[in-house]
Image (cartoon, rainbow, N blue to C red; front, side, top):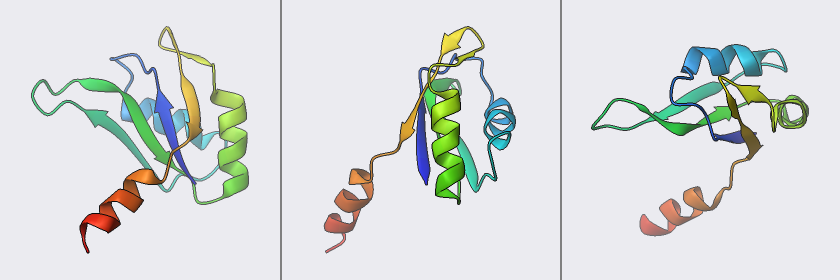
Length: 90
């Protein structure tokens, strides 16, 4: 299950996210979104967990948790971006 992690402090690292989410199960991927011009975090990330049960536990345990001074928001990532992308290919 792909999760969207929002409201991250700009100094939160991808490694910190990996450690945080790994406490709740196996990670398939963790991608902190960076600004191409400044090289700084945009304040959100995508985390993918192969087991839906683990992902649901991570959402429950981490949504609203304070990390580096910011209350993060964790939810299931919307799949609309994939659908739009596949329509463009036709």
